[in-house]
Amino acid sequence: MQDARFEDAGESALKLVALDAADLEIVSALVQDAVFPASEIAWSHARRRFDLLLNRFRWEDKKAAEARNRPVERVQTVLSVSDVLKVQSQGVKKGDRDMILSLLSLSFVPGDDGMGRLELILAGDGAIALEVETLDVTLQDVTRPYIAPSKHTPEHDLSE
Image (cartoon, helix red, strand yellow):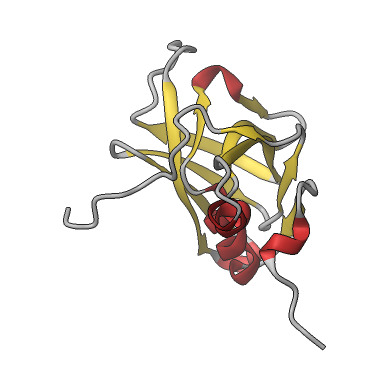
């Protein structure tokens, strides 16, 4: 029996749930370099839910795209966090709905009794911190993949 490969997934929509730190590492890797306008941030205190509509780079398809010499892709994805008690942000201008943000990573800092702080690290020293009762994150692709407008794989200067 052979292990599954990312190439085997084709254009299948992702739907993943992260309930612990190990799960969150996978979701974090998949949302790295996702971009979104500030207008796509939704926080419902009454429902205790935080949602982002992201334009996610399809890291899981990168090798297949390179092997087949086709353009890399993005897909619109909803990142939802349940059981959110409080939201704080840094580097996100409130009221500037046209501001474009880039998500670099997700991390979880555990607290007492399963509670904790989910941190969304943004490019340019920005961050969104969610105090959560429990870690419950869902990532769900909601559109078909499309060719990344830049036609390039995101790169990072690691010397900084």
